[in-house]
Every structure is written in C-alpha cells, then in structure tokens.
Image 1 (tube, rainbow, N blue to C red):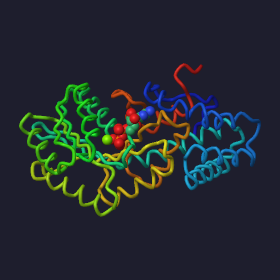
Image 2: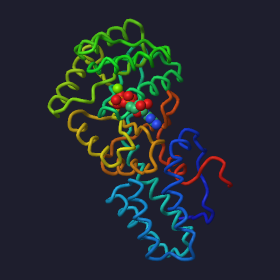
Image 3: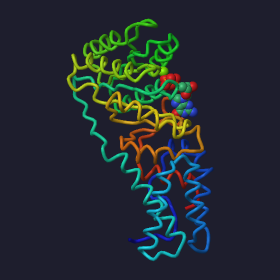
Image 4: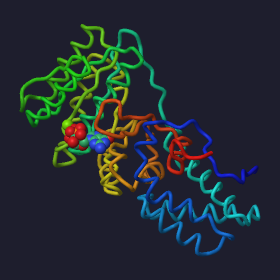
Length: 321
Ligand SMILES: Nc1nc2c(ncn2[C@@H]2O[C@H](COP(=O)(O)OP(=O)(O)O)[C@@H](O)[C@H]2O)c(=O)[nH]1
Ligand SMILES: [Mg+2]
C-alpha cells in the first residue's frame, strides 16, 4: 500500500456535508485526528481512539472492529509513523461505510410511470422535512414531483406537507385528519398518472404503536400502489434521526421487520456532535444510506458518499492544504 505522509482531503468538498458534519468534526473527530500527532504508535493511542469513536456514536462493536483492523494493518505492514496509522484508519472507515452503499439499487425512472417513494420512520425523526428535501432534489433533475399526505393522524402534519408543497410548487394530495391513508394513496396514484408525474413521495404516520399495525398499514399502502404501478414503491426510504444516537438503530431494526427498506436518510446530522451513527448503520444494517439531512431547509441535503463523508469528518472547507 502506498501511504501519503501528509494527511489531506482526497475528495472535492461538499458544502452541505461540510455544514452537516461541522459539530462532529469540531468535536470528536478533531480530537481523533490530534491523537495521531504524537511521536510513536503506542497502546494509549489505540485506547483513546476506541473511546473517542464510541463517544462519536460509532457504536461499541464497530469502534472495536475499526481499532482492531487498524492495529492489524499497522502490525502487518510494520508501520511506525502515527500519521500513516491515521491514513489506515481513514481507509478502514471508508471501507466500512462502503457496506452501506454496496447494496444500493439503481434508481430507474421510467417515462409515464410514477416513481413512488414511500417514506417511513418514527415520528419526529424528520420525515416530512426530508420529503421536502427529496422533492427539491428530484425537481433539480427536472422531474415533476407530487406529494401525498398519508400521515393522516394530525391535521398539523397534513398542513405541514401542504406548506412545503406551496413553497416547492408541487401538488399535494391530502384528505382530512383521520382519513384513511389508503384512500389518500389511491387518489395520489391516480392523480400522479393523470398529471404525468415523474416522482410521487408518500408521507406516512410514524406513530403506529404495535409492530403488527405498522406492518399492516405499510402493506396496505403497498397493495394500493401496486394496483397502479406493479413495481411501486420503487423506493422505501427510512428516515433516522442522528440526534437520537444508537436508538436510531434500534428503531431502524423495528421498521426493517415490517417493510423492506431500500434506502436510508440520516436526518439532523447538523444537530449532533456525534455524527458517527453512519458507521453503525452501515455495519449493523447493511441497508444503503443514500442521503443525509443537514438542516431545516429543502436544500439542506446531501447524497451519501463514503469518501466525501469521511473526508468531511476530518477536514473543513477552508482548511489549509
Ligand atoms: N437541524 C435539523 N432539523 C431537522 C432536520 N430534519 C428535520 N428537522 C426538524 O425536526 C423536526 C421534526 O421534523 P418533521 O419533518 O416534522 O418530522 P416527522 O415527524 O418525522 O415528519 C422539525 O422541527 C424539523 O424542522 C435536519 O436535517 N436538521
Ligand atoms: Mg411528519
């Protein structure tokens, strides 16, 4: 392996990622980076590194794995320079995150067939906001987007989606509070066909208390979608709240039992100094992480890319080269 002695960014900086990971970078990852500013690789380095990774929400198992792999490489390759060990750590981190992109399905959009995105997740994780971000994202490719308010539990939730629809200039199909979510989806599918919509994004309720209810609800919506489009929903996006730390992982596992998740959005990454959650999501779930949310605006979203992500954990835009 060819190692660079100078630790520097390898990918083009991403403004959204830079912003989203600022707290995490300034906190734990700055300390991690500094750990390697020492004269030799000693036991203390490994111990402190493991502790800091756990602090960053990387998770106990994954932290241990990362450190063990780094140690192994350092030994195998007779590395003595701490700066080289840091480079090994970076490569291990990228490698781990690639687990979260390996199974990514190619998104195939077909003319005249609505590409349906079913958005699921626990209440408050950032689903509705993430839907607005996705809408803006697809609009950016010149696609027509429609939203469906299938979270019918609260009037406020429906209104929130309508407000986003107005801001983004995309139609919202909604019924009244308490209406049958299946009926909303039915109407939305028809409208999407009728208006030649490219992307239909469906908001769902995250407050279904039992797993059975959740499963029944999501399966019902799926069946209704498939009456119109056989492959729908082409994307099932789970939103995880980065500020809830490892708890987000527990929630994700619950959802996975109810519905087949194709993509993950890690929301509110800007709101935490413990942005290491992506590593445990990658390792424990293996479900593709496709996007990250970095704020409350529709443009506060970035595509997830392991290299850029790891670079943004260590380097800020404007850092000296
Ligand atoms: N800082 C920050 N706040 C977010 C982000 N995504 C959502 N929020 C906020 O989190 C709260 C809950 O979001 P909402 O989309 O309503 O969640 P839902 O209940 O899952 O639909 C709102 O106050 C959002 O503005 C994000 O990426 N960063
Ligand atoms: Mg909502």
